[in-house]
Amino acid sequence: MTRLDAAWQQALGAEHQAVFGYSLLGPWLTGSDQQLAVACSDAHEALRDATADQLARAGLTPAAPAADYPALYPVADGAAARRLAIRLEDACAAAWRYVYLQAASRPTADASGGTATSPAAARVAGDVRETAQSALTASAVRGARWRVLVTPTHPTTAFPGV
Image 1 (cartoon, rainbow, N blue to C red):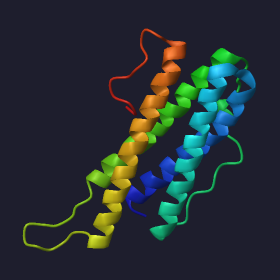
Image 2 (image 1 turned 45 degrees about the vertical axis):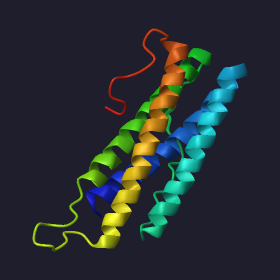
Image 3 (image 1 turned 120 degrees about the horizontal axis):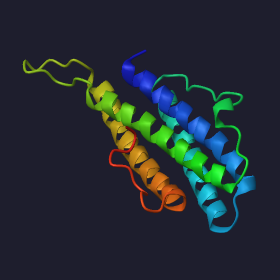
């Protein structure tokens, strides 16, 4: 398994965890916070499914979700739920940032005209890089939306995923 494949599988794992984690938030949130959680959960479910499909099309077996994610507990109130949402988004941003790094650092053509990777592999890496950039950006935006609720004076991070 290449470093890109491993990073891609780890990003799928982060998406699995986010979907699970958002299910823990629902009982503690109301109104617009609950609507935000549902929208975030839906986005992670869609990205999880798309990532699993991409991995399968690339000939890889998508990583299965864990049965449980004990590090996400306890969620005792709305404040803890909002902080957990930030953790979920930060974890996804970090995973997708690493995928982007691995996809962007894959060699393509060398100076003599030979290729270090096949054109098909380069195309897959380019597709994965685009997905990773989009996913990183989306997690950063979602994280900022949650941070506004938790730390309104510092809703963004300088380098999401770091």
